[in-house]
Figure 1 (cartoon, helix red, strand yellow):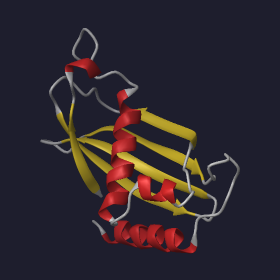
Figure 2: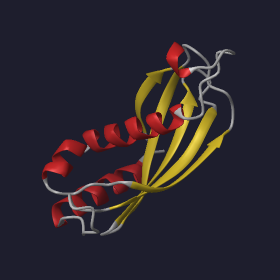
Figure 3: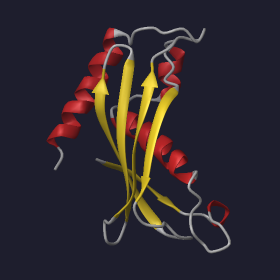
Length: 139
């Protein structure tokens, strides 16, 4: 589900005007945060409830170069919302052609403020599952 847009900034690019590979990670984070906001929740609220989602595994594939000043669409889909693990899939698309520029996956552990594993609260689990159903219904 396309959740947001971004524009490639000059600071995001190299001398050739191509977006640096690390920018994909920021766009993934933005997409994930916006996905959660669309459910009426936020990372700040999760943290206030004592649940953190550090990334423990990341996969990125670069299909085509994104360039300076290019507007991209940020797509995030929740693949799995387990009690102690959350997995998101992403696509970064050209806003004009809808060509896939970057795709990837992040896997997150659910931990408490002490850094130790914990379970998602029942209410957070239900919220994520509702979002996952919404993703499945989106063409």
